Length: 111
Image (tube, rainbow, N blue to C red; front, side, top):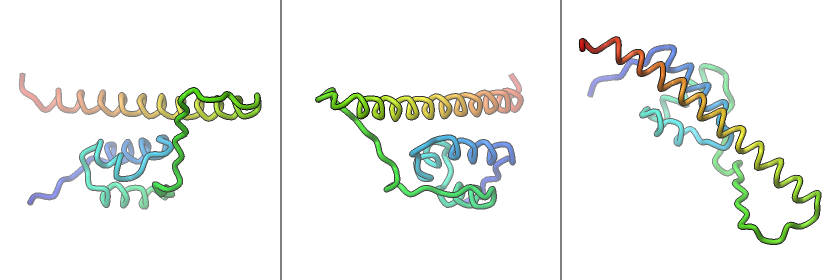
């Protein structure tokens, strides 16, 4: 099996994607990028990025039950805003990676 060589730009983009994606595990990001989780882990280690464990993530999914106190509602809304901002940042990073990949592959083809 041939060993894949990834560009430095791809590696840095992968590290940045992990760094800006709150709650994502190495395995999730690696699966999305099509690399082994050990490979991504080594890139993170080389970049000095601390890794997160899956148990540290909390996904609060409320189904519209009791609103609770105003402070609880405020805390819930702040958490939701933070989660949405992280999702937006992750989506923007993914979009940038896809744009770069499209430019790269467009240059590789002889159409």
